[in-house]
Length: 375
Ligand code: SF4
Image 1 (cartoon, rainbow, N blue to C red):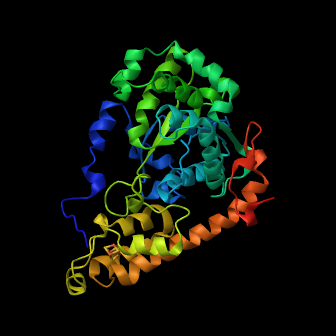
Image 2 (cartoon, rainbow, N blue to C red):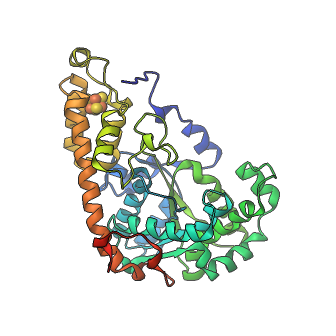
Image 3 (cartoon, rainbow, N blue to C red):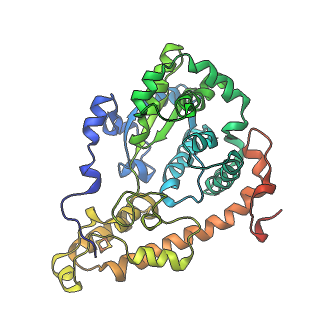
């Protein structure tokens, strides 16, 4: 078992410095106002915010706000991708919000992650179906593929005069050798974020990882110049990668994809990095270290919704009663495969109603649907 004893990965990340530098508040600053009925807030998986309190004020005044969160389409979603969308589903239901979901196929194209625009269209649809299948109802969802939206193009064009090339270059760390689409994409991203405010007069909330905050800062700057309500944000901790290294789509061993089969899930989880000891004997004597354990991280952030159940796992790990490969890993495998099975069922319902989620016409014929999913 690959052990790392020099501290929790999350603690090592220098969150404090970044929060201070960019004026982001700890979530504890609005502790009493948080919706603690969800584990993301009880367990501090949402750890920081900008202006979320202003949106809560609006809710108290019966005023509307919206959530916006995009997806840069890729081959197959992994569970880490879905964590933020699980949060959005909860917030949308809790605050009765509209949810805007741009599928930023343009981003994937200009940053050369996908070689053809046609391919990005297909991936956008596939990803959208998987995201909606976590339980989004279509009536308050506004999804669109970015390159298909004339309104986004107009808004990006309009915002582009409020951004200089030097600002974007510095913010994104560009060298100047990149294609010009990469710098213009900042205006497109700002258009995605601000479209609900400009078109519907909804202030917006953007749930993101801290590493994506650069786009928030650029967009808030534009919003101030345009006298628009600057977007608010919630910052979410990522799921730890199974190997202990950060989760990455390009490193399949670090994550579980929605379409990993049972054998692959079992193999990946049985090899997962944990806070367990080198031998069973040592673990019985010394107990494990759940704070370091990726399996425990997945229980805490995703699968174990009941606080008492989580507490029990924690206590039995610490006391040495639990052994990683006997008690925890098989339990996590079962959670994952059950989640995948339910997700597969939900996909069929989403596909039947797919037109209702989108703001424009879509062409499902491009997708390689399973026989059971075809209408
Ligand atoms: Fe992690 Fe469970 Fe092992 Fe403890 S017993 S280190 S929680 S896998």
